[in-house]
Length: 341
Image (tube, rainbow, N blue to C red):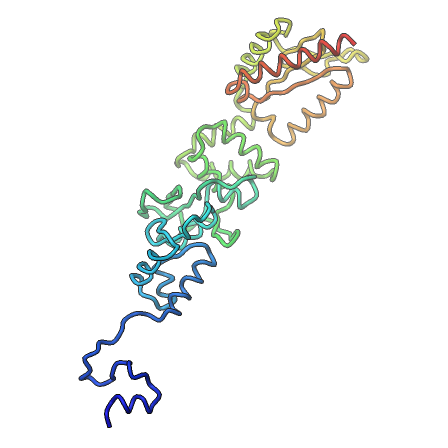
């Protein structure tokens, strides 16, 4: 009986290659379509494709998966990662893919970790990761990479499916990412409003590490928030702005007297006394929740005596003097109308 007839009786296809060693048809090496489909579905569920891991898990050779992806709606992001064409930015997706791709078991830190801990209102544009020193990674990765020789000692928690360092460590790494200490002051103050113990935790972390990028900036920000550094120079510039708008503003701090008891109720940075208009230039400590609450209580007492109090932060005086002058001029005009009845 001929080989073709034997295969037909057994239910096999006449076009299939013979199992005989003498067959001239080479066996196919293409993986079944279902294996590729499994790899694509698993990757699409997370919004990215890891060519090596997904291919091995699904039984598809990496080169075969790469060729098929190039011919489909997927585009390479960086080595080992594929994204659907036109996929919107997603910092959590980027962090998850890099955690899976990079050696050393990276951990999420910096601004993304702070957001995952609920200490930032908005996520950053790109993730920050910490890896063991001296792990080498490519410079073109869509992430900021930190290194530490104490990687094994880092406390790690799972947040949104990602390994995340504790918030104090995240702030220490974030200090190397911000442009200046003032930016860090504002972020620390906002974080303190969400969790009051964060300043103490960051100070402990600072004391435990003698050297790291951003240490000086972080120490300066903590000093500003604790009130260790004076901001009298900023107050002087604020008074100069006010006097440029109206020369009647005092050139020194002005005590507001309680008329019933005859004692000082408060001292304001500068005042237009005849209009009962006070201007305060607030330094970093005024961003802390407990200080801000005392400020509001004092402003309410002044308002009961007919005073209006406007506050500007130190960085507004330095960075936006034109806006401050414009708002001061508008406020003076409003108080003039108020004084005229």
